[in-house]
Length: 398
Ligand SMILES: *Cc1c(COP(=O)(O)O)cnc(C)c1O
Image (cartoon, rainbow, N blue to C red; front, side, top):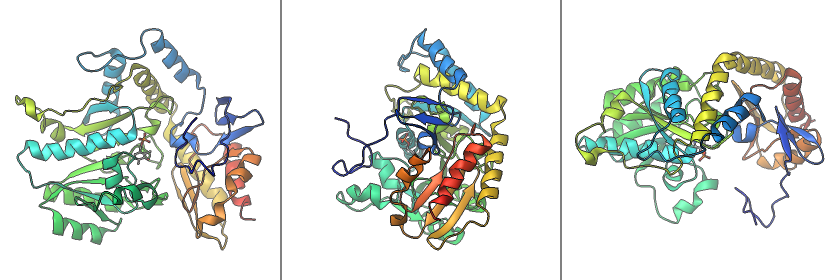
């Protein structure tokens, strides 16, 4: 018996059973449908991409996995080298793990231990955004801010060491003034807050955050598990404003195998680099640096560069803006577009009940949540396919 995610099993509607997938299409016995949300925002090259499948097959013929404790291998070395050159500035030190949540845990553990290693024991507080989502493990739930996910935490008492701020500069400045002596790090989903409701904000907020972090010596963490690899219309938001620690997941492997990475800059890495064994980072997920995952991630990044994915993403944004211009309805609060993400936020989430089936019958897979009907399509989508996705969203309101 499968226990499905985020579902009341008693009332859950039967999931669609996928028997094959290719390009932007998922296939059931009954029909083909465009995956308008890229399997939780990860499958940026679409399904059954020959080069990605080949990378996995090639590696599987050698070995699928060896542990990274005391061993190393070419796919993980090549991926770390690639990330070093692909990522901005001195974000050069890659710590791999098996999922985004774990990679965020690693980032927080790095930040907390960074100050302990320097003998600064008072810096225990973490600043994060209201409506933040950073994963489903315990510490990530704690820095997150979403009742749907986090009611369980309340049973364990108040969050002592987490402070939430909205994405407004005056509130951020106040939080820094008030807490800077105890502040350890500021963790954000930069520009686009995903699971907290597809909320978009301006880069000036991040520029100010960087200044404040520098002034008060607080580490800045970007959780780009969702935004990395072009989703906001930037390769990484870290290209605009550089964090001290960057977390990537989801699209890292093109969505082919679960893997994630926590990338530290030189300053953070050197906070651990020492003759003192106690200053080491004591972490090591069993499947970190998995050889299949690293091989496919490497190929995914090569495709991203060689086939100029950034221009594909700006095309998606252009088409989306063109198609959504002038579209309004009384039930809609706002239509938001950023890069390869479009969100139609409704005033009352009940308005979206039944939309998934409606879309399915029109050959689109969609999964609205909270007050959000949204699309985050694979970047290889053709214009007419994207238009079909957007038309279906609009059609629901007419
Ligand atoms: C999905 C997501 C995570 C969690 O990643 P998992 O691989 O599901 O553990 C963390 N942060 C953000 C911003 C995400 O979108």
